[in-house]
Length: 103
View 1 (cartoon, rainbow, N blue to C red):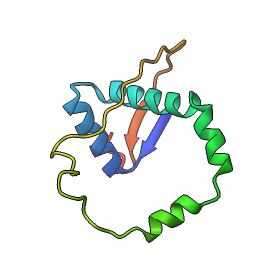
View 2: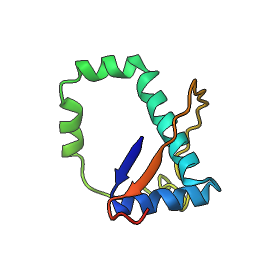
View 3: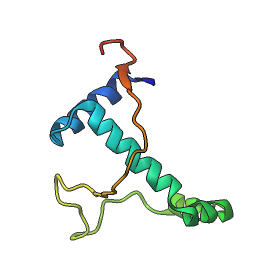
């Protein structure tokens, strides 16, 4: 499988992989695995999404665009983390290319 991504995405993936001390293919494999598992393993969320009527989005649209209240800020450099363990039954080689063709 070959994936072509915008240069900005490729640069972000490379930086994220570097920070995790992973190769780009390792990082992408883990990211795809986590996202696939999140989508496929939670039928509850899918069922809730089907019942959604859009009221929540309207409420969010009405919320003021304001910074968090004092004490509610996320500390600098702290991001949400979720870890999941995935077993792959088969592995297929994947190549990654930026849209600019540099890779």
